[in-house]
Length: 434
Image (cartoon, rainbow, N blue to C red; front, top):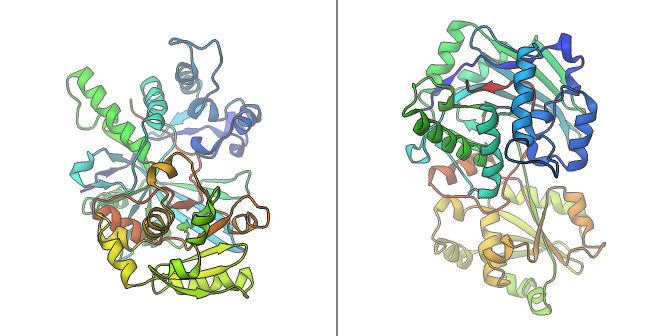
């Protein structure tokens, strides 16, 4: 199963960079051009220069964002801005944050993981990938041969073996940083040879489930194969065979999988009528919640979701709590997907409401027609009085075990099913592949 190894990570030297909070960033794919410019200004050693460098109109094949990242990386390593661990180690990485007025701590293990092809079923995906996203990361890998940020993977630890070991390292972090959002990031190397061996042995019997980072994993596989072809083979311990991951116990109390609500717009009068209780009752048991406050309605949705997949369809005129009925279950069984997929509330929205009742195809959704997505529930509710949506479909968060079951069935989640919070920070540990 999974080959999870310690690494000789690169880390910023605090005596050179100053405040570590000034050199970290969120993941590259959530950084706007305005935020990118801000990170450039924040500190001359901000990792943005490596992970998501600026592009200019004069760029060419020899001088571009990727080549500049490679030059900067080499300079920082030679000057000691980035210093490499003497011995391989794991890292305990904790994130302390507040959500919905409640405080959480999420615990992960930073390690380098041997790349395995999808068909080996060691690292399992749950979503499809797009070529556009892969090309950018491939060019950066070719130029720098370095993982500047980890991808997020989940594992199963029902006996809490790794959980207890990591807890023993949690009290005295070597690095403690507060980011721009007030979230705290704590890092502690794990160097004890006995503990390293215990961790390796544990994961040798485990599969891993990608939570966030499918594109980068696919890109790392392609890069590994490309390097192997160029060199006519790779040593098993060559860095190109591995990538940096943050491994999280799927029962970790700080692992939040938030809902992604559906906002519907540009619907015809006929389509709107399909969202009436009479039409929806073809596939769902319908409960009217029109007189309830939004807070009470969300409580009802959460409560219903504890026993079966549930959702709320809300328009300016009505609020309906839906749970699937027998006819709906039968139609889901004919989806061509796995049982795990058929049991997802987001799959029921896609198949029963969007495709069957509203005749909105998957191609329409992919093209951005009729459906938008929003994580913030309050903002989603506000789109109705603001007239930026005609109807909203409110969902519960999906327990990651349901995502795991879809992956185990070799299936893929519907588009925009999972939103993992919080994101991993970039700039604490870097994994060189050479």
